[in-house]
Image 1 (cartoon, rainbow, N blue to C red):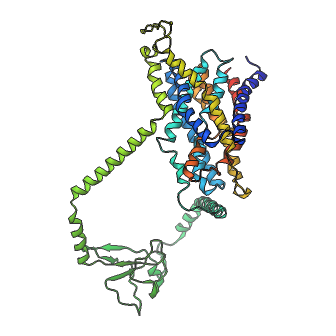
Image 2 (cartoon, rainbow, N blue to C red; image 1 turned 180 degrees about the vertical axis):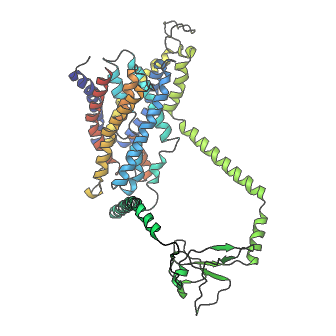
Image 3 (cartoon, one colour; image 1 turned 30 degrees about the vertical axis):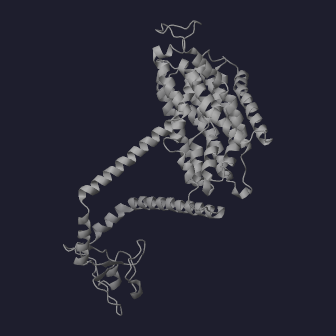
Amino acid sequence: MVSTGGLVWISCRPLLKMLLCTTSGFILSRMDLFSALAARGASQVLLNVTFPCLLFSKMVPAFTPQNVSAIGPLIVIGCIYQTLGLVLALIIREFFWVPHRFRSGLVVAGIWSNWGDVPTAVILSITASAPFKSGDSDLGVAYMSIFILVFFVTLFPLGGHQMIARDFKGPDKEIREAKDALKKKQESRLYLVAKVLRVAFCRTRSAGRRPDVEELHEKQEPNESVPHHEQTEEEVISSPTVMEEDASGIVHRSQHAKHISFSGMSPIEHVSVIASDNVPPLSPRSVGHEAPDVMSLTPTVVIAATEKDFSKEKATEGRQPVATRTESVHSSTSFRITTHILRFLRSLISAPTIAIFIAFPIALVKPLKGLFVEVVDSPIPNAPDGKPPLYFVLDTANFLGGASIPLGLICLGAALAKLKMPNTRKSIPIGAIASMAIGKLVISPILGVLIVNGFVKIGFIDENDKVLRFVTMFFSGMPTATTQVLLTQVYSGTGEAEHLSPFLIPQYALMFISTTALTAYSLRTLF
């Protein structure tokens, strides 16, 4: 069993390596030696070449028919973590002020965490040494690829990136205006809660007094009746209104409604004024030829239609056959569904997802796997060098994939160096920033560990698969993905992500402490 000091050192070592790589990218960007154009080119190399090669080279030898059952729990846990982030972001947005141009961006920051370069660097480093066994690093990256697949599918094919574009539609709001709107919203909700509690309290008290009321009714004489009083005009007007419609379509008053007429009104043909419930009387100036507003508190003016109007409507409807209209609706619906399906399939066409989809059948089908790696009782003969025929493809992918982690960390440092903080302190949502950092790096890891341990107890996760348990625990405590920086710069139109910067910097600063604690606790639980 590893000592506590050894666990702390094992947990800190990969983070120190990651810190040095990230700092080098930060310094190069600050010295203008790694420009924005160069960083964008390096990111394209990372996304389309090195990272897909890393996934392919690790998934093919790691996945087997015995451990492929772990894909289900990985997908479920990935979706649970994203749901927790969604709930966290919605709670923060309801209780804290968030800039108007970042309300949907806050939700994106809560849902999509950094499931790329940071966990890859840490998991590869930790699983490559004791207390893990040989070959666990390949299995760790293979398990991690399922989280990456969930990330890409939910962000692009399912339209998650469009939430960022929603922030930059419509007019902007001033900070004071946004804060006042949040304050009014909170006051209205507090008033609603207080009203519900007051009604519940009154019902409880009335339920306790019900026997006394029943006794009072029993004491009353049988012939006792309520004295009849003559209704005034205001009581008749405030009584419920019932409207009836005859065969010709003209609306009439029922016998319970009262017809109101005003002296001195201009004559209007076929006009009936119906008094509605709890509505003050009309004044002569409140009746006009225009239809009243829906939310108006004035009585409704019903203008009876003539037979000529109904004949015109019927003639208009008769010009369009029912079959033609039905076919047009069905054709538009089918076209819309086909468009969404094609858009979803096009979004799946990216280098990392293609590498994942290619690696799965190769890893699970024994003759295909024997072309790339050595397999016991393989039906594929070896090449003259004693290796499988396509081993050079896997070797090349492994060679290129080795550049993925340092290149990704350098790009991460450059992205953090280009972030700009808002000019004024009033424009920084301190409450939302602190809540997001604590929620993603403190509360979320605690819930993640509890969820994984619960799945282990019910048998949903194999207790003996320590790599699976470590990966699922570790992914619960990741900061917001830096992919959002690029998407925000694209959709903003100005090439900046000023509202996102204050949220990212505290998270990545706190990450070195929280990740060390999470890694040490996970290793202590597993070993």
